[in-house]
Amino acid sequence: MTETQDEAYISLAVDVMRARDTRAIVALKDFLTVLPNPTAIESVLKQAVYRLGDLDRVACRWILRHPDLLMPELDLQEVARQWVGEVLLRENRQGDRKYRFDGSGRLYLSDAAKLQLQQTASGVGSLMLEEIFGIRNEDRLTSDID
Image 1: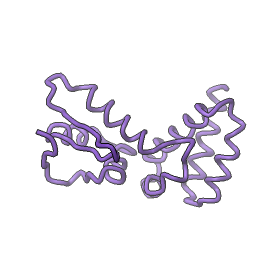
Image 2 (image 1 turned 90 degrees about the horizontal axis):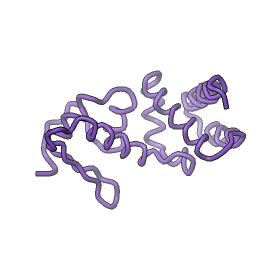
Image 3 (image 1 turned 60 degrees about the vertical axis):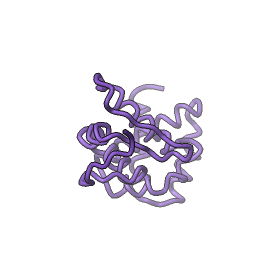
Image 4 (image 1 turned 90 degrees about the vertical axis):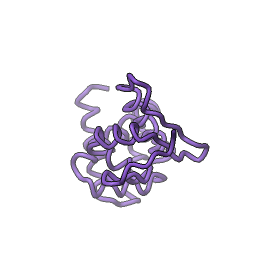
């Protein structure tokens, strides 16, 4: 697939997600089966969600509140967990940005980790913090981990 084709699929996915119509999302996923493999479908949907966070926060919040619509092609819970790990591992030189997930996916953070996420989050990152992990940017810092 070429970059132009990728962009066309991503743009289509963004447009469909912006409509917030469950039937249209099912149809989109059916249509994306023309892509060469499940990884390509996952990549298109993931990039569309990230772009949606910058273009239409209301629609992005809606899709994050309905993660089952993108399953099994894209696991938004896993995307959010990966994002947290990437952000916190990237600049954790002092080892103070401690975090963990319990068996149900609940996120536990040290104050430093929570602050790092809140300062780094924009677009879909800030929405994932709010919708998936229940962390609002204005929340007081209260440590979940020593």
